[in-house]
Length: 174
Image (cartoon, rainbow, N blue to C red; front, side, top):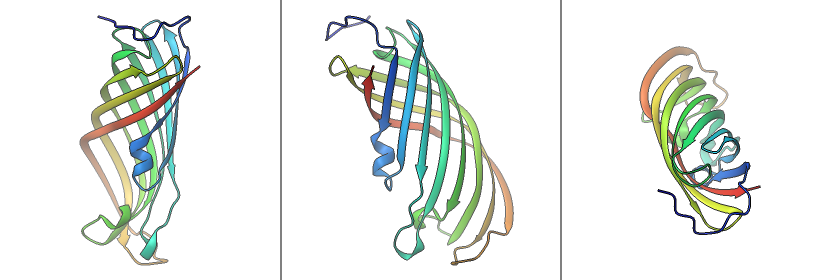
């Protein structure tokens, strides 16, 4: 059932979003654009980028893209939705020093997943959205000791199931 808190004169067709959780994780810059395809469907493309190096040479340089198709149970940009997404990333770093084995990683990641989310209407142009997703990932990378100026040398691959999307986003609707 759809509940409308604000009267909508015309349906919004485009949204721009930013995920606050990415900003809180070491200032990872991110933006998502979403366009309505039909009354209950939309297509989104999100990107994120983290170029920062921190104290003691701790870093996780990261660039990623994630396209997603969404089906909205009420109408687009309102209420519950489910999505299917793919993602690709390139990374380099020691994950802010979180690796227990003092290693640095240089590689790529691809994967796909499913998600669920909810979108609250705050005003005619602003929404708040939460979303979580799970899926499968495949990564290939080089691993090396976490020493300055040392190139990664050991090649590895890994396929794993994990969370693939976690977002609390501010949404601006056009």
